[in-house]
Image (cartoon, rainbow, N blue to C red):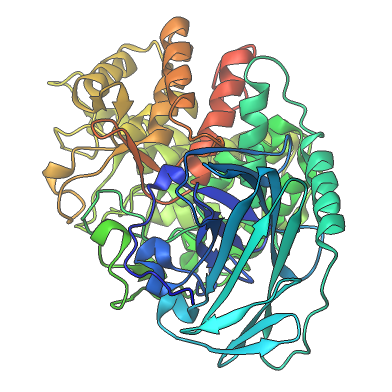
Length: 606
């Protein structure tokens, strides 16, 4: 009899690899343990949640029974198909894990093959629905098990004999060279008929072809092509195919500080991410994905601009009610664990700027015209004209008092600037003269109130003495030149105060601007922004050195989280993080392309 081991410590964040079918996602560690599984959507209640607790909250581990001596893993070239070679004293097995984006069902496939020697292997599947809070009813079937709880049902099938112990599916088997064992897990609704079993080997071949054909369309050339291609694959995997929405990350509540409370649900689509993501897709040559993302954005932003949100669900859902799951202890006891995100109700003034920048960028790159896009833009501008002078919660979604954040005002300037350029360069109907006056007025106010003469640089908010990494965006959107004395002073402040061990933190959390306890890691996107600023300022060697350092922080399969702890040398925050991979793609383009980071963004002559 094989008994379920409980209270196992989960792996470090960087030890996980992503599986995805462009609808849902899973995370698998180096030992073959799937500790996170959300089907059929990214934001579905996980049926394996050991990542945020322990094995009693759900997992699926396929691993040798003998102690592991060595692990080597990789994605098949140009794919998201994970191959893990696990070696023990008795031999080596290869575990191939994947999901199938070319099918309509929500499946996970696991194929185990003997490589050398004879290895005893055990598969233990403990499904625990609703983030580990519900123990399902597990029944034997002719080919495996069926787990049911309310509306949800999961089947797991295999050629192997299985037993059920403590509501856990158990299989123990031996593999010699070239011998194989395959598993298929499928999510369905309880009332649906049993799913059809697929030929795992054929599905693997089809999935490989699908991914390689997709990644083979990447048009990015030159240095770092391989790294850029892998990040684009990650962004594709984080795309919800039915709508084109791109989630910020595949997880919820992975902490920005171990043991802390900065644990948020990132399985939603932020408007802010749109500009950076669209730019990345266009850099890679993925115009169809860019069109789909633009369509998602237009649909999500449609309606009364006063009701515009900073984020939406993957299908455009507006209500993202935040809840705390008190039965989960959190990753390394970092609680609370949250689902939903209360920040969806915040007022963030930069969002109109992100919308205008995104749709302007689409026109610059020659995407097919979209009349609805301009209707949304004109409505956004009408709203912005009455709102830009108000305080907001800012880019970092503070949960403290609203302020006049400098970055927010700059993005209001971006909105007006792109509206003017869309009229003058693309012939869109609108009052360019009025918007030009608005743009000039905002620019003058930011320079007067957002610049601290004593410190010699732009600061986090009007009247503040604090700096903020979001100010690195000023030259990237064309608000100020990188070699302008004001920006040189701003960069110096950021280097002095926010650069820790070569990486950039967003702001000093001890200032209590966000109303939360202090402490978090370096924010990787901001570090990419710093490299962009170095390049724009003519500091090319420093830009390349920093970029190479950031590439070195990726895990063994090329994934990055939201943040990094340079002291303990480990990843922090939700994983994998779209923003970090977007930063990688954009900075690579900026370093190899003529004209530098802001060439495509906001530097046209009026």
